Length: 157
Image 1 (cartoon, rainbow, N blue to C red):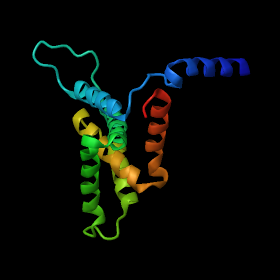
Image 2 (cartoon, helix red, strand yellow):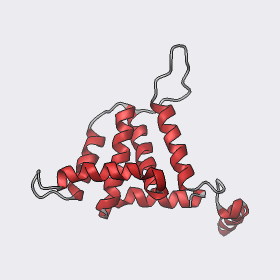
Image 3 (cartoon, one colour):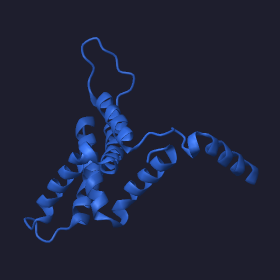
Image 4 (tube, rainbow, N blue to C red):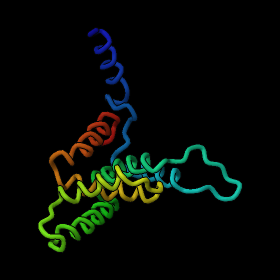
């Protein structure tokens, strides 16, 4: 049993310092996930072919991963976080009573679970939800933690 674990660790250590994908970086992950979203949600032009089109659920999951990568990358990618802040301030500003970021997070979870959205809207909802969930903390911080831990194992720094 332990021989397999040791062999896997040795293999992982030999791959670019233990990183499966080499040195990707959070900006590179953000670019890659954005490319997946753009290519996966756009309809082909006349006569064009699509190898794989994202469903609404897949687009929202990739959107959450992309939103988390945007926050980790910083620089020009901060607009996703700014949009999340602006959206959540509508609810937490007092217009809807005493609502916190947990309520906004619950709102996003309900919309993403109960509504079948088109891939473009699902991706945008996922990107905004990633920023709100990261700020809310608690159980809502789990997607960010899982995504960043997985990204770290894959070579994103």
